[in-house]
Image (cartoon, rainbow, N blue to C red; front, side, top):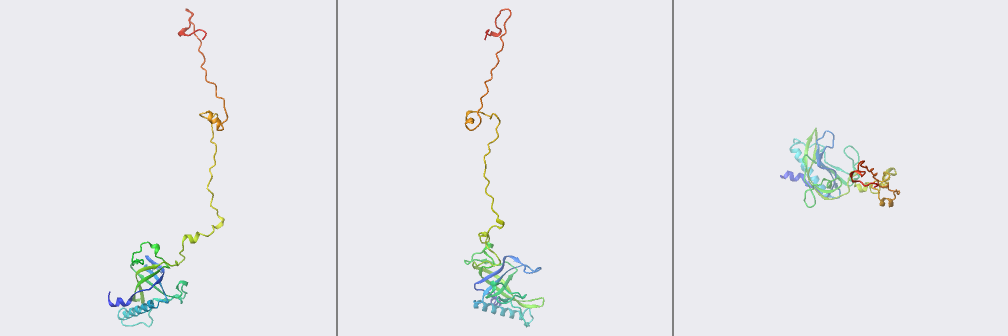
Length: 250
């Protein structure tokens, strides 16, 4: 890293992040190039960080004069730092989270490293969100775009320091539904109760036995055993004796 880069690069103190797009590039305007970016909220009480930013912007302006701006300093140099107690570029006031802060947006064409307090890479994207606290490495540079001359802020690595209240309406499911009544007086249906229904039976029941009588089946008199009719004894007309060994009268 050369001396000019040292002059234009700084690491912030503890800041709060908003509009976080560190894992997926995002275009803030239709047709613009998507970039990795975040808005940095710097407490006005952090005078040391603000002084380092002002010095880095001054060095970037000097780079512009000797480079992109062809030796001429423009009367008005667009500054990337905004007063959170004032209004945006479009004249609208900043959000309440910006009050008491300097507001700065840093972006990059390439994804930057995101680490935790122990210098370990953060892989879980849910751990990085608008509202958390971090330190951010930034680099200020001059630009000349469509007639506009100013100083931009490049995004470098980000170190998450601690969690904070999420911004942008991000809440947990427990907070959203825990104590909220179900609209319309909706009551979840009760679990269905199985009612026993005596199965249909043929009459008389199949496999009829005495135990079925005790279980409630109407008692039936078993049909009489089947009697095989006695075959008539045939008599030999010559001998007068039964044919086939039969016994007369039986």
